Length: 145
Image (cartoon, rainbow, N blue to C red; front, side, top):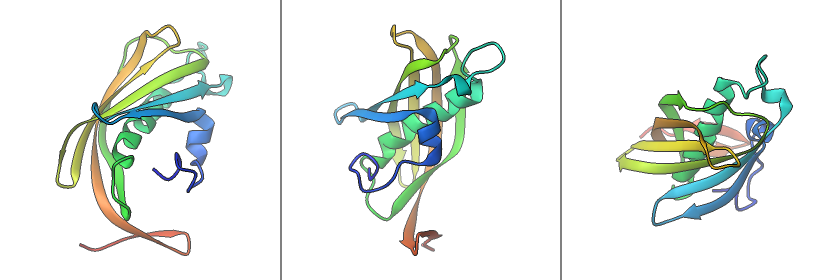
């Protein structure tokens, strides 16, 4: 995971979400991250907007794949489902992402977001597809395989 190791810059969307890597549990294949949800992410009711929570879940589940993925590979979300459990408000939001099952180039994940009190805000499942990629002159090129 190049961002965690300081080998790559954090994506602009991760910066907007206030993303921060906390730890990786190899036994559970689970990544723990933190989001510093700013007031700029709220809807008219003052809650963090649902699409933003879905993005946070994606940025919780994806790293669970990337932390063990070999170089020259990239995984993209091909399907996801989010369940909104409780309202989320600006402040710290904690994300967990884990690999549920991996088969060839298809990876199934699950994730959850929690508030500072430990209450579940939202849960999700997602399917990722892994591809071979190479970087040339800062341009990503899909390898034909």
